[in-house]
Amino acid sequence: MAVRNRKESGTAERVLDIAERLTQMRGFSNFSYADIAAELGITKASLHYHYPGKAELGEALITRYSERFNEALAEIDRNLPDARARLAAYADLYAGVLRNERMCMCGILAAEYPTLPVAMQSEVIRFFDENERWLTKLLEDGKADETLSYRGRAADVAQGILGALEGAMLVARTYGEVARFEAAATQLLAGLTP
Amino acid sequence: MAVRNRKESGTAERVLDIAERLTQMRGFSNFSYADIAAELGITKASLHYHYPGKAELGEALITRYSERFNEALAEIDRNLPDARARLAAYADLYAGVLRNERMCMCGILAAEYPTLPVAMQSEVIRFFDENERWLTKLLEDGKADETLSYRGRAADVAQGILGALEGAMLVARTYGEVARFEAAATQLLAGLTP
DNA sequence: GTCTATAGGCAGATAGAC
DNA sequence: GTCTATCTGCCTATAGAC
Image (cartoon, rainbow over all chains, first blue to last red; front, top):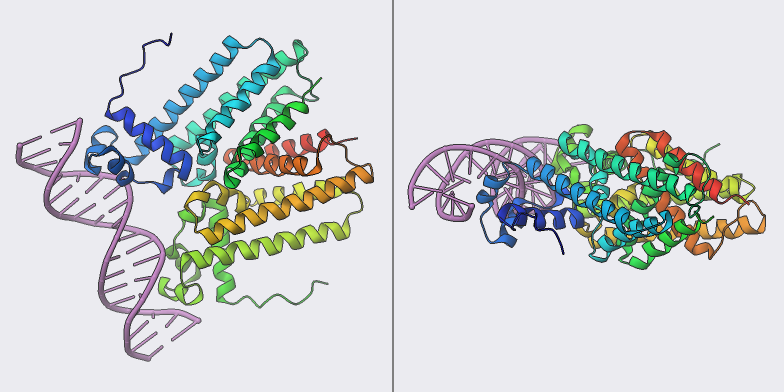
């Protein structure tokens, strides 16, 4: 029943698919046009037709990633009743990324932040801002529907959750153990139990 | 009253100082022998006398960092009475790194983990293991002296703390706001209050 | 849109003189 | 220990043919 508004998978999209995977696994500065070209079966030069430079590719990368992430958040809001269930689903989004042996794109970009083109830097910040705003709303709802409990400002708790999940992901991927992340997520949920 | 057992700062140590700072700020794959040479006022070729390759430099980097970190943990154990105060001091170690606009070395290396030489990968894991062991002991002490309270196994909570601090650091540095990290640390401490 | 060919720069690394 | 000189390889990027 998915809406047919996705562009059919042209070369530009396939380039993004590959670049996205490589970024989430190795980091933006640790893959090259040559890697993408080899995997796609075209030449490096052809890539410049679709994205004039690596900076532009990087911008397109985060833009699409953020859009999809926000769509996933909207989907959670649409389908899940209480705030607690939504938070569990949010943590499971992260777990899903980890199961593919990847890091959150913006988490890994945060690690290389000072070396990124400024346009990419702004987009990373925006991604975090949007996540925190969504989490803040969720925490306020959770206090209202009594499925979540916490002390202090919702925005502060939201920051704490975002950081805790990003960090748990980072360490869990290093060990190659998704269970590590899941344990941390469970613990986080438990700490918000009324 | 510091013990005089540090080697006098020879070139090899100064190379490590620079490489350490660059790694913590940009990541291991985002600085070059040329960067170090320029800052030190010697040629790239001379660096290979001290460290035959970047992999060996990387190993020396983590080894020294881990040693110093473990010394800092021992210092905390020596000086602070209760477990809660020791945990606060632990979080403040991280804050101190962040104030220098740096990331935890092993946190940033975790982000580029798949691209690291295997010897460095092992050392990153060992750093995390040692931190978790220290935190686990601290949590058990805290339960005993009743300065900390938590549910579940101490080792699981230790993993959660490590991840949460690494993640809070990563995000806070992106925003360039140490206060973000401090808020997260305060919240973490509050969650462990008896 | 994709190709060949090529430019120009920087990476890590080595040989050998001093 | 540090130098000069040099190598090889990879990087991003461009020009221009098809």
